[in-house]
Image (cartoon, rainbow, N blue to C red):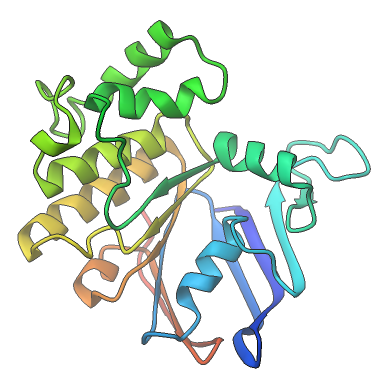
Length: 240
């Protein structure tokens, strides 16, 4: 499988603390990559740097098919994204990335279908068309009949499934998940991570997930172990 996202020589410092120290990582299309490590190891900083949320102090983040600052590039060419302006970087995150957070971060005043559709509407899709596309995700994710419920009327597992639908509805190239099962019980965690890994793979998206749970990470194709801002270990599983 081809690489879709890569970080080369990534360095990030917060004052005297080095969160990333010359890290190299590649993410392949349709694969799921788990990033694990102790608290303060740099795993969340690595995810946020690849996702364009945090800018590295050194190194480069490259995305396949992204236009560089010098002009258009072919679909298989690479563009550097860590040095993009805020407007272009924000647009990239909306159009080519999807995000799932630990607590879902759904808007409490909107029904589930509109929480999912919002990701499309922010990219200019008319409301009616966005809601119609959002509804298509409810049955595959076991949410049929919950389209009109607000987040406060959903269980934790249901809310995370809505968050998965929101991340995938725009057909992103990469989905980033930061402790997506951290607030769930073990049974629900297993159900959610199985849905997350299978749904991203089925849509052709890559998944980059930070987790502290080895059982959750075991559902992924690869595991990176991070310690003291460096890659300290790597496990490869069979990729479907």
